[in-house]
Length: 115
Image (tube, rainbow, N blue to C red; front, side, top):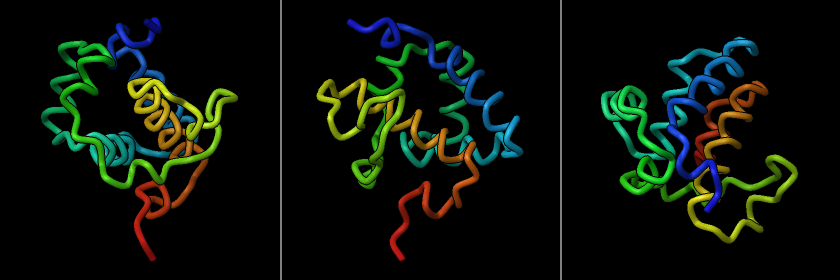
């Protein structure tokens, strides 16, 4: 089992916040992309952060967006499409959309909205 599976989501969330704020994006935007991916309400997301839910438990109760499969590309040197472990793929989906947010990608593109 990967170490990240048992890591509290809140621990990585702090890094996400620092990353996006350094690039001029807001926590509100970060929450928008995370809630889009996971199906969590704002209140549920805050509860997972406060209670330090592990990534494994966080994604166990998440209802992944049906368009999440449209998230492709490379994160940490690995193509998302090539990741076979389902939990790791979900974690990398989140890493990728947070990365896209930090890089200034338009919200419509991050949320994989059809034209």
